[in-house]
Length: 196
Ligand SMILES: N[C@@H](CCC(=O)N[C@@H](CS)C(=O)NCC(=O)O)C(=O)O
Image 1 (cartoon, rainbow, N blue to C red):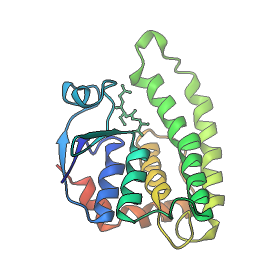
Image 2 (image 1 turned 90 degrees about the vertical axis):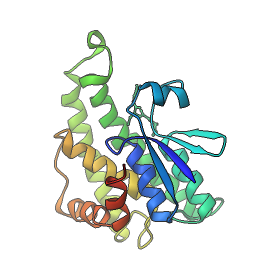
Image 3 (image 1 turned 45 degrees about the vertical axis):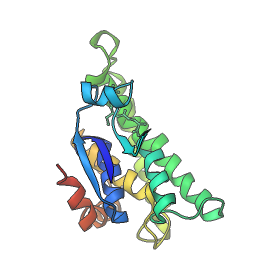
Image 4 (image 1 turned 30 degrees about the vertical axis):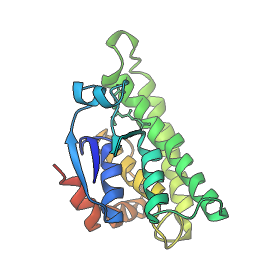
């Protein structure tokens, strides 16, 4: 059985959601970022970490990709053009949503106080609005980024939309709100959110 180190309050939720979608068993090893437990599995103290037998796998997107490939779900097959398009969406969400939110978080509470530049958040909010517009355009093919088939970048995008709402970042369009509601009303998401 898989063990997932982290908590539902951070990117760990993406991995838990993926496992739920794939119908895989897991236990959650509750550990905050930079805690002793997290650092014992990942020297940087970052979460999530997936414990798979004697392997300790880090980075939520790498973990989700591994699980999707291994169990054959929420991903197009490696080496196909659809996979390249899917990975393009993943990179877009990481570069233009996750990275913007993470930079704002770093300048709010993650970096040592003397290295924070709070003024950068004004620019990041503007950038995030542009990212939302671009996400809207990418969703023109159907219910999910890859049309009718839900894939890994949908999990990351929905997680970023929730993160943005909590960080009081610009509001998404009605179309994006419907996309967010569609994803976060899934039974797998609800089970993952309540994991303990
Ligand atoms: N690229 C990594 C980022 C992991 C990460 O930064 N996790 C945050 C919690 S969401 C963390 O552990 N932060 C603590 C730190 O950066 O010191 C992933 O997607 O898993």
